Each structure stands twice: as C-alpha cells, then as structure tokens.
Length: 408
Image (cartoon, rainbow, N blue to C red; front, top):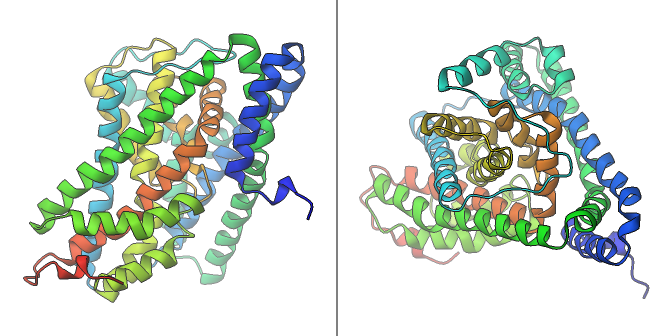
C-alpha cells in the first residue's frame, strides 16, 4: 500500500516542514531566499484574512447567541467564571513571562512605537475602537474590527432569523478560507524555517523550544493549580477528582482534535456522567467552546510580550495588566479552527504600537511551535469548560462529591 503524505494530519505535516526546513537551511543555505518566499506568502495570506475573520466571526456569534430561561443565574455564573478563568490565565502568563523573558529572532524587525504612559495606551485604544470599520479592515486595526463586530452583532439580534442564518453562513465561509490557508502551514513553515536557519543558524530553533516550554508550563499551572483553586473557592470541596477526570476524558481527546467545537459532544457526555444539571450543561458547554479560552489568553500574552521584549519596549505594571485584559477579551473571540488564537496576537500587539508586519511574523513563529502549543491550548480550553460548569452546578448542593469520582 502506497504512502500518501496528504493523508497525514496537519501536526505531522508541520513537524515534517520544520525538520525539512532546518535541513535545507543547513545543507543548502543559498536556496534560503527563494524558499523564504513561501513563508512570506503564507504570512501575507494570514495578514489578509485575519481582520475579516475577527469581524465576521464575532459579529455572527453575538447575533446568533440564544437566550435560555433555564437556570439563568447559574448559566450567568458559569459565564462569569469562564471570563475570570481566562483573565487568570493571562495573569499567569504575564508572571511567567516576567520571570523567564522571551525574545524572538525576526527576519525584518521594525521599530515599534512604545507608549509613553498608560494614559497614552488607553487613548490609543479608544481611538482604535472608534475607527471606521472599512478603514479598520484595510489597515488591520483589530480593536476597531472587534468593537464594530460586537455593536453590529447586538444590532442584528433583532434581525429576521433568515438574515442571521445568512450571517452564520458568511462566518462559516470565512472560517473555511482560514482552514484552507492553515492547510498551507507546513509549506509556509518550511520556507520560514529554512530562511531562519540559513540566516541565523540552528540556535533559532532552540529559541522556539524555550518559548514552547514557557507556553506549556503556563497551561499546566493553569490546569493543575489555578483551576483547582477556583473550584475549591466555589465549591469548598476537593477539586482534583473532577479536574483530573476532565483532563483525562476531555483534555486528551481535545489534545488530538485541536478543536474545542469538535470536542463539544465529548464534553456533553462527560457532563452527563458527572451528574451536572442538563439544563445547565446543554447551555454552558457550547458557550464555553467559544468564550472560555484560557489557553488562548496564555498564547496571546506570552507571544505579545515576546514581541515587546524583541523591540525593547518598556512595559509598566499597569500596561501589563491592560495587556492581560485585552488578551482575555480577544481570546474570547478566538476562531474555532486550529491555531485560531494566533490570529488574535496582532490585536494585543497593537496595544503597544507594534507594526502589523512584525506582529504577523510573531504569528508565523506561533505556527512553528503550534505542534505542541495548539494541542495543549485546546486541551486546557475544552476540559475547563466542564470543570467550571461542574463547579457552578455544585453551588448550594450538600451532596458529597461522589459524582466526580464515579466512573462513566
């Protein structure tokens, strides 16, 4: 039986692209400029589709979100817990990035425009938020795209169902385009790695490994320390039986599917086996697949701070906290496609005046380490959906925690 590389998953293809790119960069560095064009084209396609993706996906998600009358207080509490957890994840990433600062070696590093004070940051954010929507799309102003997407989405909630269905169809179409672009990631990464290795040596790959270790460490701390603390505060019970079970039954499958949306059926079945109220989990699990993005917040924060360090931009404590809030909010709008959170990095980078060209190079670096980063990120995101839903469901219940420990 013949072997067809196209039948392999995206992750093995990216691994092959990294290995082959490194080999070509070492053995035939004279080809680096020609092969580097593949990487530049890949980055250019990402730059073209990213602003439209943010605007259309968020607008459709807001317009098509349905209200539920079932146990509204617990549903709201779960959503609040999603947001709190995502913000905590960004803060964890901030502290680790301060302790172990990362820098990136970019092919064309442009000078950033560092903000002189927090007030300057907030002023810049406000003006970007009220930018013309067409100009925001043309210039890659992600904050403007996000604000207009939310406002239009709220307005379209009153539109006829047929219109909202067409809006969802448009969002699905843009998501399909993103999937097509991401399918080219192995080729683009092959070109990027070959050019990087040929110009600055194999040490660049060690730099990427250090960045990947920091990302995974932050996600493990979130999964095994912060999440249990949150569950303990909410329920007053030993959190580890449910946390470990969710990592085992939800996190493992999400690690390989690399899609929170694809893992929704797994989470629904796990929630049922945990004895969670059906009226609660049938609402919160699908919502969590779109707004509970602790792993995405970590990725956005770490890579943004790596770009900031590379450009030698000074970041005050208050500016860093603003970054955490922006990372948490932008993570909630992360695309449901693999590595979708990487496309939100320019939004956070724009907070510090980092040019879009530089930000998209950071996104390309993210794709190189996405082999492990995106799988771990999705595992954290998806398993946390059930963890937080379980914690809220236990509020006010006096029954022992046998539900979390029972087998499926």
